[in-house]
Image 1: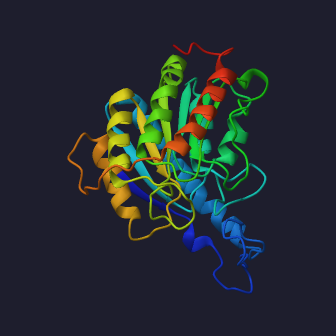
Image 2 (image 1 turned 90 degrees about the horizontal axis):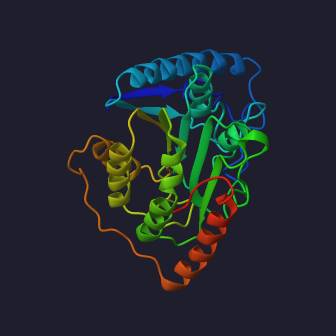
Image 3 (image 1 turned 60 degrees about the horizontal axis):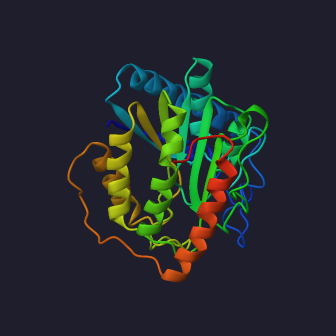
Length: 293
């Protein structure tokens, strides 16, 4: 799995007089930008997006290869008309839209532990994209519940799997295994992964309890379950742990030994009861649109 770096950071105006962030809500986008910075960012984003879809084309033709794009800023909160949640342009949605135009069915699997509300909104009316998000709820951006399943001809093609705060590895795998058959029934031509690592147990922004082992095993599972897979980096805010999370995930995708070892985490019985209610509610919402056996 090749890894390449894509960044827009140099395009952001760093002068505090030109770019102010809320101290109370770190997930808010820039409120004010240098008038020239948008065009500078647009030019750089064009380069990033071109690189992503060129890579995606190559992955389509070579079913057993993949790629991991180290994109900064991340993208899955960005909407067509505005930025949000550290995200300026929606990297994975740009590539997904391109692939759909080429006649491909795309599964977008988003395991960043915030809902990718921008990606969800962009894809919600399409029956050529299955958007599957596993995220903490409640958390920013404030929605992503089980009854949000798409609109119009895209109804039944949005799959939200909200996890209660405090969830560990075991609960993540229960969610993954219960809804994986839906992803297989979709029969995607390409799998685009929004790879966020803010569910790690020592991440400062969220309250999930995932281990390094989860990210390694998730890479292994995704690499074994699907052909034609690529990933783009989303969140992850423990800067000491983030490289370890990424290396473990990429090693798993390549069926290589885990670079970093950490014991799987467990979830308390009360959270399991909460999750089971969510799980069966989600299965009920999707039952009219897919076979859940």
